[in-house]
Amino acid sequence: MTLNIKDMTSEQIINWLTPIVNGEIFTSREKLVALLTEGAPHKALEDEFREFFNGYYVLALELEECEKSILGYINGNHTFAHLKHRISAVEAQRKSSPLGREARRMGLSLHDDPVPEIKVAELSSNEFQSLMHTLGNWRLFVARERLVKLMETKASIEIADRLSAEFYEFFVCYLELELFLENYDYDPDDGLKLRPEFIEALEHEEEYIRSGSKMYTLEEVAEELGIELKCMN
Image (cartoon, rainbow, N blue to C red; front, side):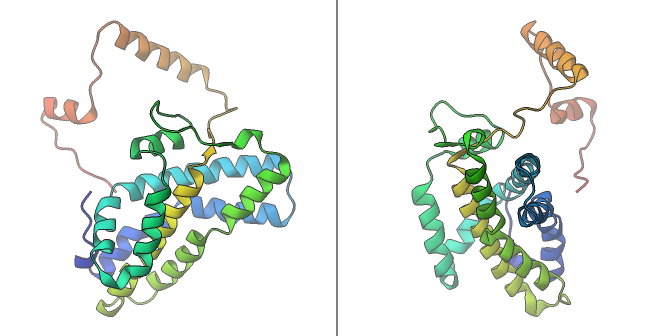
């Protein structure tokens, strides 16, 4: 996705950012912090971390599409030297490929990518709680609060540059969170039971593919039927 924030008005930037800053990860983080504060049992923390991780997965889907264009703009602008240093640190420490990071978010792994060193399921209660404290206090959430406050300011040409700058800070915080989680092996679906009807449908699709039949994408079906697809978001 090509994203030209520098060419957007304040209103356009706000409209684009609104669903991002209101994502499930931020709602879940508040719940996670509340659970930690009240000394909730381990099971409650585990359940909320699953929601947190799924929210992180959705945020990653939103941001990775425009990562290349965002990094290109930051690296080409001397006013963001402080962010360039942090980006370089992330890129130097990354061990996985983009596809490997996507697989890891789904609890999978690629053959050529390194296996995460820490299995979340094997952490002790104290270690798991410490991880939750670290995530709950991640600077991404501070950056998000600053961004939201600025977004709530009356939109004008004057704040477009400030919105962009705050978003770039937010984005780099996200990259740092992504790097941190790279070391953790976690499957958000582990322990969840599949509904019988879903298993039956999945087995039917596998049998259909093994029989030599082709599965069509939504785009292919639309082209075949002469239908124009439109984005509803």
